[in-house]
Length: 399
Image 1 (cartoon, rainbow, N blue to C red):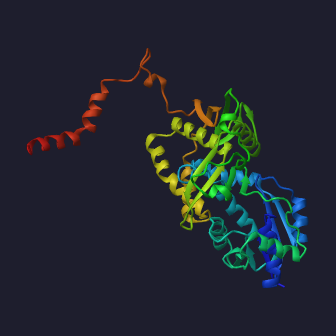
Image 2 (cartoon, rainbow, N blue to C red; image 1 turned 60 degrees about the vertical axis):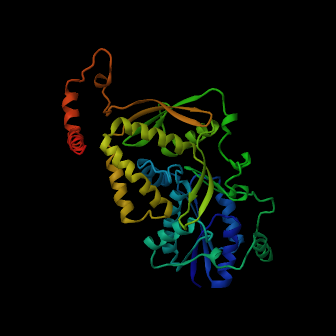
Image 3 (cartoon, rainbow, N blue to C red; image 1 turned 120 degrees about the vertical axis):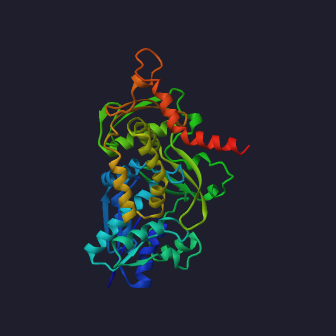
């Protein structure tokens, strides 16, 4: 019997996919799950997958890999899709998809499968990664083909086969969580005119209920990567977890966005990304201190392109690889510390310092010790304004 490796979350859809693939395609199903920082019990998932009919189960704790090889490159680019979304879910999919391919090769499987819907972004992200890394595999996307029209029909299918399904009331929201943030959609949130109910938020306090006293945090960077928090050196995962707790307590990182999905439609999404918001703010402030204006502007011009590529699932492409090389080359002087104030949903840089700073107080000051040669300004203005001077003279001739 041929094998399929399924990207398995343990929810209703992927639980039903296991017997669906067995019955329709006569496949042995290997379930694969990764821990990227979400609340997860691998023993429970293993038992559930096997009870659903899986022939095997793989589980990886990929938090360190996720931060080092996916989050940090995106941080180097200050990547925000459409200027606001830190790409938490989008960053996780190529890593999960890559591991599914690796498991499939180990198991000598022929098929790869996922539980993504036919109108979402994740189907694109999984399948583009599989085309890049596993072009020899066949892909099965059950949610694009099966006969179920409602959740109740899926539940009935599962119960007939004695597959464990949730018996408690389902949350009206669809959630995806990892270290870089939480994505929240569906239910009442599908109406972009509706104010998100407070129960939609998972890890952040409402800003109006956040502490009245602000918290100041100090983030240290080495070559563009955060290495310490409040003077204490931390491993990347621990640092992000602490910033998520601190930022979440102060209501930092909430995003309410109508975005353009890869498949062409618009979607209203709610995100919570405390650590991502704090670190991107701090990183950009440190870059403003250490990068030349022309390099900063070049980075800014490529930032949205990079974010779009990540969003649509083009992680394993030569274009994305080339952009990574560029952004990485800009980080050699991004060293130092940034102080940030967390208060009532906002994060504000209030201090920054770097041993590689291009800022010179002696040149910038208007007080004593000013070393700037003011007389040089006339020559600069004359040269910079020469084209305008010539245009102005021509304009006078036409009067």
